[in-house]
Length: 520
Image 1 (cartoon, helix red, strand yellow):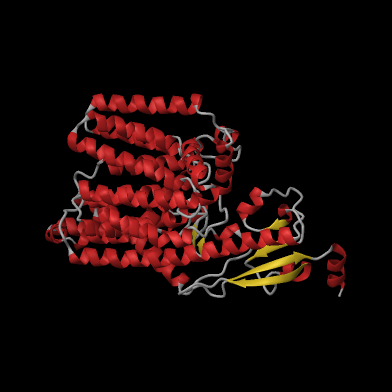
Image 2 (image 1 turned 120 degrees about the horizontal axis):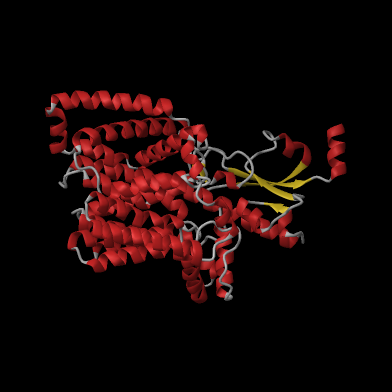
């Protein structure tokens, strides 16, 4: 009851902001469009769609039937809060956490920037996470009670997840490997049959878009050693960055700290291996192989300047202290990876469990995707937290709790900054673009607004009359010579830490006036 009440409070906290969302972002424009088609009885995915999406489309259509399409972000918020509730319930029921510690740990997941970003709008991640967390819940119930109804329920829930995202195949595959290692071949066979069954249904019965068919699994990535290594290590760095308090907690626990310190030979080996891993792992790491050359490495949602900055033209403004923050956060995460791997190798004899296997299977599946996006990492955060909790002894530790609380507040503040900035930027651009289209009587496609707007209103000729950008005329010569500055909008909200947060609206000059200006 307490946990449910806390979940309601989180919903009420975010609701006033989420209900103001009246724009589309990233890929969710096509999910809105497809859901609208579902409501008309056209059960067909838009050719642009990459995920399977069907179940989310039906959920969205049912919601929109009663509350309209414009309120779909509220449905996403409800699913997001339910995900927090399910995750916290797992922590209480299977990891012997109190409601207080479960809330603190759950909040670190809830306020993770990747989680907050995917909770804005109508992206697929939150809907898939709902079925993933339910699958984990029922699987742990099966492990505890050995009642096959929970195992079949796990497989059913993972199948429902498959109807949103293909990566749901990781669940039965992980189960097959897990039961094989336990030498429980009856359950192994059931998991393998389920995996094959999922694959057959996916390939032959579910209507897939040409995009899904054409892309497929990029198995050739495994031949590209630099890419594969850098991708997996890059994911581990970001995971460690988001889970630093859990890594620190391993060494704040008295019994485990005593074990490390008292075994002198192992302690020396631990220090040597940690240093060796830190140097070697980073020597081989080539971040430019996977995307950007600097932390947080991956595109395209959680970047150095906020949420999805490349959705608007120009170079986005930064926030105060960003360079130092990312430099030290990156270093701490890399140290965390090396230290944790060394600890597991030396002090954890039984480190293989379902959570560990799921993480490995998911990482290998991510190597096969055409383009890896940072938001895919969110799926690993709950299993990674559960794994780190599983290799620690459950006991109250004030130091651990303080570290987790402080880190939770840090993520909350960072996510607040990024979310407020992102929502206000997109609201301004979408509303202003609609106003211009109506008042100037020009087609929406003649306005270069956000990336979602551009994909929603295709302009093959690229003859844009109006252009929104982060760039001023001072730093961008094209805008200085070829555009009139129409308006400057400053992004303001309480405790804003961004430096000079402005959006510039330009109108293209006529060809003759541009030539005349250049001659002068």
